[in-house]
Amino acid sequence: MPGVDLIQPIAVLKDPEALATHEDTCLAAALASVTAWLAFPDDPMWEPWMYGPDGRGGGQGKSVRRGKPKDFRALETAGAVMVSVGTAKAAALAPTEYPLTGRMKQLQVSGTEFEHTGELTVHGDMEAPRVLHIGIDTVLGMSTGKAAAQSAHAALTWAMQLSPEELEAWIEHDFPSTLIPLDRDGWRTTATNATVVIRDAGHTEIKSGSVTAVAW
Image 1 (spheres, helix red, strand yellow):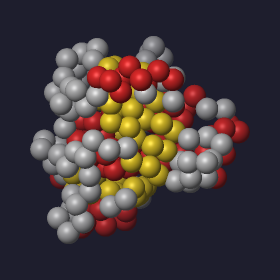
Image 2 (tube, rainbow, N blue to C red; image 1 turned 90 degrees about the vertical axis):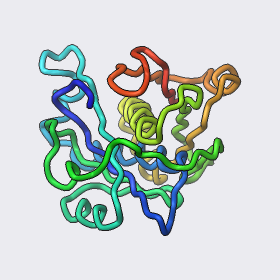
Image 3 (tube, one colour; image 1 turned 60 degrees about the vertical axis):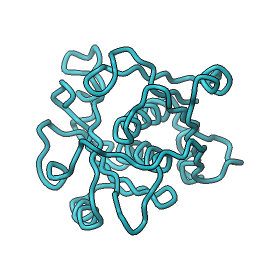
């Protein structure tokens, strides 16, 4: 598990009757992370999670876990925000202390994997004045759980950089966004406009400093 004391828990739905793709799941998790930030603005855990106890930077750690439909019903009852992209569904809460408690603690982390299509996925109106574009690496071999967490890092960092007016316009248009799988050619051609670059801390799966996701 990440070597940080505060974690934003995110659950992704693994429903055998409506299997989601890797790409839809990553985008749903990303938007759920942002939606939780917007839904619980006064939660006291956000500041130390973002900036650390000394104000010099927190880990902004996220734990992505897979759950069944019954788990999602319990999470919704517990107040988690819910986001759907295609057949994918994600639930998120504000950051909390690790180890987790409650229903989130019961969900599985390892083996969170969905079918990779390699195709772009879209949510909302692409003609909106502000659209979030997330580029996610496909070369490092990240699992869906890992890639979803990196997508969430990119999305939340992007949203936090918007002005209040830009953020409000994005919300009013129902969070228009795309997730673009990036191979080596994609990094050279598609990600050139990135305003957010995510480098992994190296706690799980890949080495520290690896560029995992971008946003613009």
